[in-house]
Length: 233
Image (cartoon, rainbow, N blue to C red; front, side, top):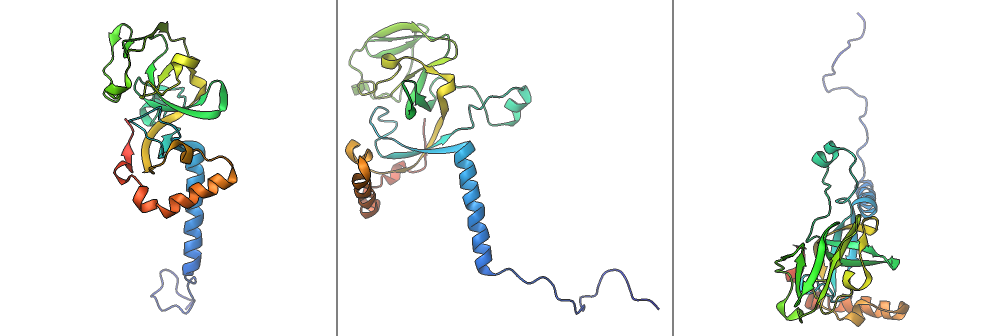
């Protein structure tokens, strides 16, 4: 009779594929992780560091944040908005954008005015379309009776302000933020290191190396652990 066909009985003498080595597993895992990180940084997330106190007390100097770059991606169809995690900018969003006067520099502020809104500051308090806005994120000691406006936000633009109203140069100073300059919404603080403005903004290679050495030496004692992995609101 001819040779049998069909499923084997497990006693075939043919050798199976050789198991992959542990080293190869590690290498493949590392490659996949690197590709994921590159993809995430390029299309979804961006990492940024807070260099100034203009967003205190929401964000402090030395906070390292993740920015969702996908949230404000344009959606041409209704089904995209239903299925994809995208939406329009909302009042109260903390956003990263290209500074209009110097687009190579990133700024971070809170959106307080949408296209068509009328913005006014009276006695240090924000009014949008004539109604006073509740701002629990603004420290009362940061209001000093400032006055601004009223001014109407142009179509396609946004009005942005820092939470530390006395330290922030924002739309009150340099104007509106065009939608085209928005990079994403600040999502969370993934690490926070207690440092001052000079440490957070090293100048030159030597200062950068000193800053890195300081962070390494004081990582445990100067990390603000209570701020790590907190959502930005």
